[in-house]
Length: 90
Image 1 (cartoon, one colour):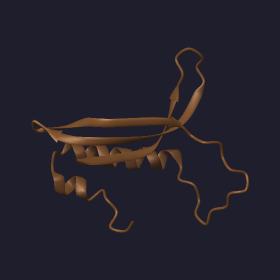
Image 2 (tube, rainbow, N blue to C red):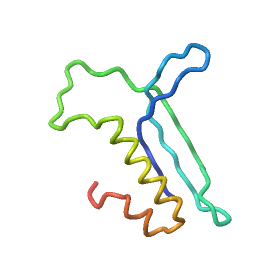
Image 3 (cartoon, helix red, strand yellow):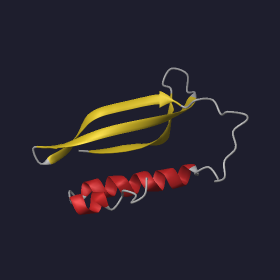
Image 4 (cartoon, rainbow, N blue to C red):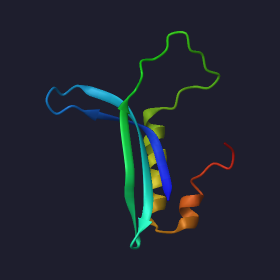
């Protein structure tokens, strides 16, 4: 199995409102294909006004780029390529 998590934006069909959300997917390899075993999405929590961070927030285009790298690795059907997308440090 493998999993993916990130942030995306979608447009509400009824109102056209843009909503940022976070997601997680858990995939299992079944009958020669990666299949979604679990998916969860939830609206991003409101930004905490007192929060401070030593790192800059990740840009939307960087998130999209990372998501593409992950999808491209999955598309190879090569577990070594998929494994390369994982951090060695927690």
